Image 1 (cartoon, rainbow, N blue to C red):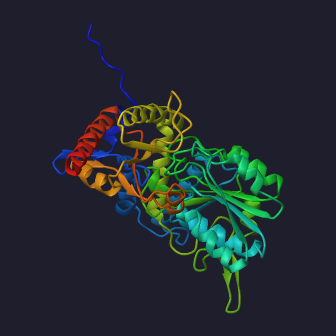
Image 2: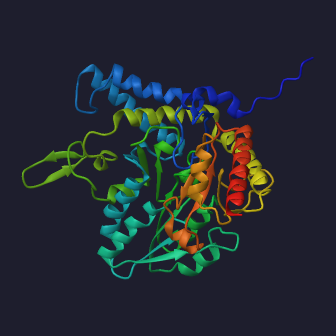
Image 3: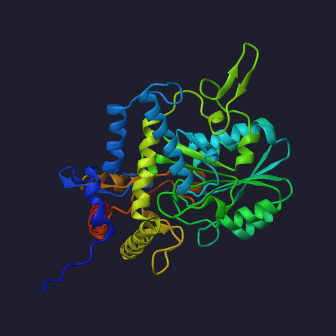
Length: 420
């Protein structure tokens, strides 16, 4: 009897991703930049193409067949998003271009109406720039004060410091679910529960969690949650805001224009019901429909299976990186199964600059990220100019990690020989 090794999740799905079959600089592509953007399966690519080839029309505005078909697919995708994160209502899902736009929507619509001089906003030092800059702008206009949760010695969210920071002056807590640099999974349920005791609202940046673990907004009990489609196998230019229904109903429109109105007069306008009140103008129709296809694809695999497989890969990645003396990985270590941590490793390699590492690895067909990963305050907090980051997805393999580690060692040997 011939022994046949059990197929991994990656073995089963890699054929769905045509981009992974190419060569870069004469070497097979090893794509380890998934935290920046994910690759797209054929189901998503074909869905986007089908829209433009077969029923390209504007939504909500036409009685003809193509418009009706486009509207059904566009609104059907909204239903899929709502189900995917367990929203209580489809009206709680607002399409945006990306998570950054979703955060800005909350900052300007809710923040400008509800924050005033002396109110406090709590963020963390690990936030992506998109969850810092909008609040800086709103604070400058309202007189609100920004406060920042720092890190524990294990380089995770300091929950005890958060408990000391929060007060009756706190009106908003906005934090990342999973750090795109440290990889830590923040205790969002506990953060939300504590914030609500003080009457504060909570926004969760779920860009790095939605593609990798099951996310339930009712279980978390957050007031808002944001995500970007391009990190979850969908196209660029589409994301979403989840908000509790009563909160969204109380918020004024962020953008004005067509589609978000009920009636327009020369001296005033009335606004459409949720979620359309926040969706001015012609939306990214094909991209939204393709986001629905991406959710179908992820759901068909199973988010629990994705998380379990990526946890195994993460444990293996750390195991191999930790054998290289020069490497210093940031953020908490994975447990034995690789869980309680994102499928990424941001690291430094002694005196070798992250950009030099990335450039030389690219010559071997290996794509990693280098720089500050839109977390400059975090890098300053850690006294770092830059880190290199290898980030995994469910279509990556152990063999790709082996190729990466071998090339990384050779690159570091090259620099060591050059410096000597």
